Image (cartoon, rainbow, N blue to C red; front, side, top):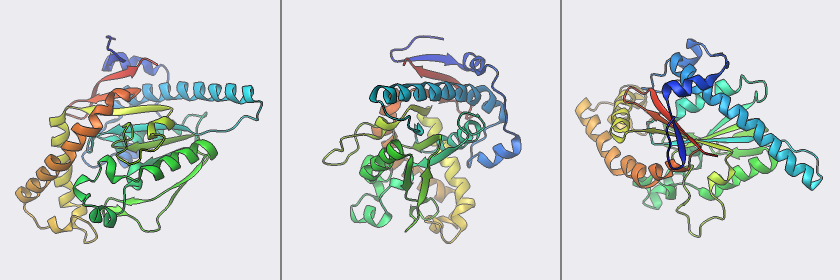
Length: 310
């Protein structure tokens, strides 16, 4: 372990030893269902990286419950059941969604918190029509493209009552599903995953009194070198061009018959003008706010982790 200003840094081997006796209760068939497109996560990665992480989260979960009981005792009120909120942030194509699903599966196997829900911040994007009206389609994923107040209201409801509803986002339609609704009702743990969830500024005017990170118990940032993320983004886009984009319902269906060179050029343009800018301007600066930073190598495997000095 080496020192850093705000985080302690662990090599992969050092981190793996922190697993202690946590068993691996996930098999290859289930892991295959949890992996995202172009995300080759083997069982060894789950054992070495994510089992120690679930042990840390479980310990932190217990500590959060004890802290809540202190406040309840001080105020002389009955103990309240409060969901524990875990945030996962990072760039597009860095593997956040796969990590979120793997953690959901692993954490739900702990007896202390069997109910684990997962919500993505995509549901709080403004509808496509509103983004078009505000000339924000080329800023999609930037802070101003989100309904920040609705996101804060969702997180506040989770904290206050344990129950909240989220809109539904369709990656195929590239839009919010009209009338779609996801209900979160009294989970032990809520995983909240998205690009900018650790950002302090929201882009809204006037600025809301709270930021999303005010409601998180623990936060994770998934990190990688910018050039590696670019490569993963292009690979995933070309894979989707051969699969999901072939469906007529897809927003990108106009690329279904494009050549590989044409699809690659289109993806390069999206990366350079939208995703790279958002990463540099908004997402990457939030990394130091995370409690845990997972750094991934070009082959998607984690080589080091950083832990905030709580």
